Image 1: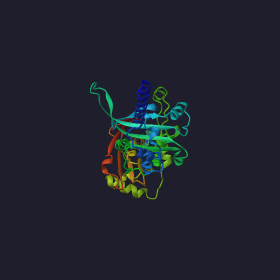
Image 2 (image 1 turned 135 degrees about the vertical axis):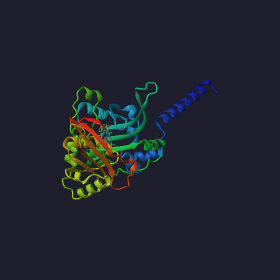
Image 3 (image 1 turned 60 degrees about the vertical axis):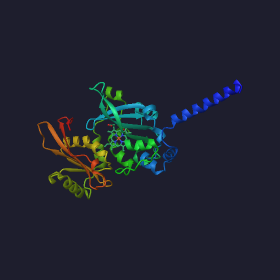
Image 4 (image 1 turned 90 degrees about the vertical axis):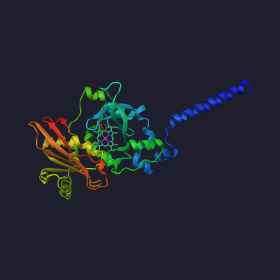
Amino acid sequence: MSSFKLKHVFFLLLTVSIMACRFSANDNSLNEDLKKKLKDTKNPVSEDVLNGMKWEEFENFYRDWRMVTSTFRTDRDQLRVIFANDIAWKALNEGKPFPDGAMFAKTGFQVEEDERFPSSKIPSNQLRLMVMKRDHKLYPDTDGWGYALMNRRRLERLEKGEVPEKYESITDFQTSCHACHQLASNTDFVFSKPMLNNVLGRTTSVNGMETLISKFQKANAPFSQKVALEIFQEMGVDKKHLENLWYMEMPLFEGALPELRASLTKFTGKNNHNYLVFDPASQLYALSIPENSLKKCQSAQKYYTGCLDKKIPRKNMVEVTHIVTICDGQELTH
Ligand code: HEC
């Protein structure tokens, strides 16, 4: 072979190997078949887990998007990090409504002690990934926002190219996720603000709870008393708390119950009302009642959650918790 030909063979090999590398770098472990299914928004896999979104629209969010902020859930020792794509980031910084194509991702991590520096905690397991996408055509009934949720198990299955199992407790992502995002309705249903802007110029609007109440409160829903009675019985709560009961009917899924705890109990503390939130579709409920104050200038609430229909496994239920708040409504202990 002449050196000319050899050179050609060499370049050919080089090109082929570069293509192979590029291919394997882009092709994370999702198999082609599943990728196709996920692209097809009519496919049940895509519908149930990605809710009409495409995996490749956000699979590299942690690398390609902007980090907006980070939050920490003290009751769960859970770190959350929120990311925005370019369209969402731009609108967020300009304080404008989010146009179609804007997307957010929120991912949660467990934390563990940094062995090299024990007073510091570092992210360990990734727990779940939640995604929001603005598309007024696809999601017309929820102010143009679409929602998707993947927990670790489902993410692993997706990454391995397997079909994730269906959700037990979420029958409709659109309504159950969007219900709580009403708390942020005056910021176009997005809670997060860029971290530094938020810390330097705090403009957080206060009581989103009022929005929830005005949207979901049922004054005298015909069956509310019956449902309330059943719940009070199941939880062994004194019937005297039926008086002064404020009733809300709202789409819920099991993950929403612990998330609502702080808002509901704070509101109970402030107004001395009992609140019952119930979802007739999933039969999930949250009940918040005041308890006798322990000390002057403190209030205590009990928060119960459960499901009247036993289809949601007990392991996912939250136990009764006490919340103690001080006068200004700030949470003191759990
Ligand atoms: C009970 C309340 C509640 C429910 C239900 C809820 N969220 Fe959220 N969501 C929040 C709060 C509060 C934040 C702000 C970040 C934080 O505190 O963790 C947030 C933030 C987000 C963000 C980042 C953008 C933003 O608004 O800040 C995404 C994405 C998101 N949620 C997706 C979802 C999805 C998907 C579901 C349904 C599976 C869902 N959420 C259900 C309360 C809720």
